[in-house]
Length: 170
Ligand code: GNR
Ligand code: NI
Image (cartoon, rainbow, N blue to C red; front, side, top):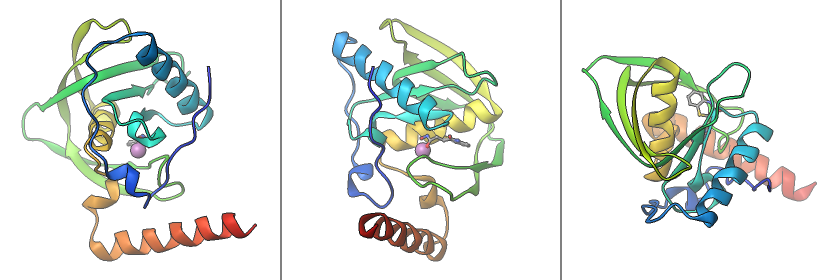
């Protein structure tokens, strides 16, 4: 197992579109395990491969209270159920310390492959549904700040750039 470094906004690599996984082999399983370790270490409830600079359609998630139920989504396909939308406060490990209310579909249907390469499906609602949509966006190169006004996004970008410069200078 290995902890992987997480890319931070506005790194242009976060804008790449991830390619589908063709076979769930040992290499993909190793990536999944490393991503789970990285997610738990960073205290996140989800992590997309894009965030660790691997541009394949792999996501890990755990919205449980005791962090004991990792969910693996390989090649996830999501379909909103109904047209109810609900805002929820989101954060992102690639945009640390910034949060915003983002409206998304309240319920979604998910189809994906698990760590064992088998297809499964589930219906999600609330936090899990939000998280699935947030992670799916990462695979498309989309970040939650893209749903904010250009003014707010630019403000966050400047603060992030300042942070990165301070970290470099230190
Ligand atoms: O840890 C995270 N919290 C979170 C809260 C609300 C909606 C989505 C998320 S995902 C985020 C981890 C992350 O950046 N995943 O890409
Ligand atoms: Ni994120």
